[in-house]
Amino acid sequence: MPRTKRDVSKSMVALVLSLAALTALGLSSWVPGWLGRDSGMADVEPGMLQVDQQARGIATLGGGVTASLYDSGLRLSHDDDILTETVLRGSFLSAVVGTAEGTGNATTEHVEHEYNHLHITDLRFLPGRAVYSGEVSDGSNSLPVEIRIELAGPVVRIGFSVPLASGVVVHLAHKPATTGLPPVLPFRNLRRNDFWLPADTGRSDPAFTTVLGTDVAIGPAGVARGVDQRSSGRLDLHVWSSSAVVTVSSRPNPSPR
Image 1 (cartoon, rainbow, N blue to C red):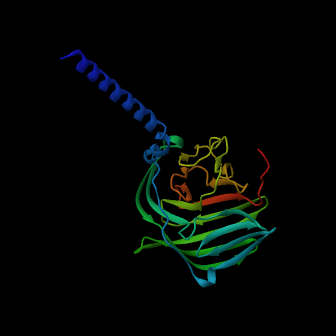
Image 2: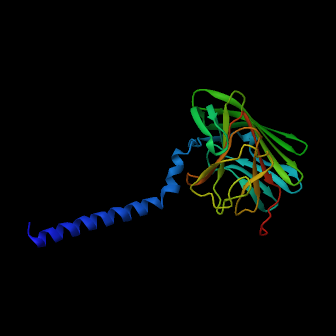
Image 3: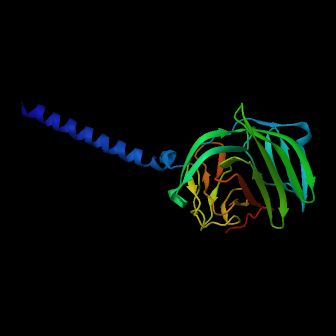
């Protein structure tokens, strides 16, 4: 082979190797974003939300705190400040049947069936509490649902109960600057990531905060719980129990931490 052709061949090999290295380097910068799809947490999507007329409206919980429920979703407010709100125009609760294995970061969930359509049929008022009744369904079969929202001093507790379910997923609306709160979650933006809570996390231990300035905790204690913000437009809270409680600050606290 003439020298000029050998030099050209070596140059081409070097160029190909360089491009391959650059490609690998570029892909590595994206790994954290898409690797979460194999993290052991299932992607449970919200279905349709239907709210009957008698369950719609604003429930006053006291202390300036209200819960409003319409076909657009559920919103908790303190006077004019939003404390938290659910995914827009979609079911804010799904029930799953399956299993969760392992603890903490080693948790892996196996979802065998989803009931992701939510139908709220009734609202009852109790002192300082609003109780919603309804069902979650897969389009054919359904499970009963009860949702209790109550003011408890500095926090608002939202309790979800779906008898016969293995676990529930609460679908919140995505908010900018959703940031983990140590020691439960790392102090970083949770965007495009999912995390399992440490096994010893209490039901009232704040897991994250958002641009709204409120802290959010996930219960009950002693079960697998996770936060999933991999999908655009929503933040999912996974709880492997037939009941769950989401605790939110009863007023925003925008001061630096």
